[in-house]
Length: 296
Image 1 (tube, rainbow, N blue to C red):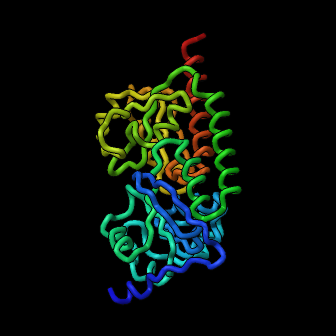
Image 2 (tube, rainbow, N blue to C red):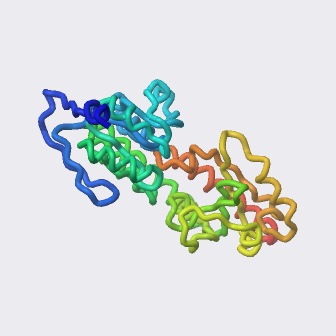
């Protein structure tokens, strides 16, 4: 622990003297003596948003799977978001740590606070939270012009997608994160906000857990008209097409089984609108099939 304390000495640049105060997603005011020059990111999505906010050059440490943009590959690793290397973080002498409320372990974050390292908690649940994160990260890092421009562009694209799709005929949808265990998302998850943006209705919106495990019987009972799945990589998971074996399942009967790459839908970053567009177009395709089947 002595090594941690010695390595955690905060360093602020002499030329930047204006204090910065920003409220994080847990409602805490975080005050820095000056814009952060040495940031450690404790989640892949945080790394990506920092780059989008013009603060990529300020990141001195990041967790595993911080793989976008490509330049993020050169950042020293400090473990995974659930298994942070505390010594490695302290050795980097950060003047700010940005953590993920629902992903990082509270015990780790308490250690940073005890060492006097400011910790900003990030948690995005709605699409506009991405724009808000961009703005606050820009303020924390002193890159506000780039961050504010990125936030404005995000909001404008969000508006355009809503104009195209949100008023379309409602259609029921099941979003599948994984197959074993079978997992989905409830109405509090950002992906559910994507579904609503696209004029869809999340059939598991009322479940209490953010990312609940469910059974096959629950999916059959919900009878979604569309199933959208992600998986682990860029390729369509083979288990998505197993739903075709279930006769009477509307999504399978209509061939409405769609894939969206997980990095485009499961990370709360500007790229989530790329994933949203795929989801919206998938639902629109399903609507056209429904109209054709009805003979109208």
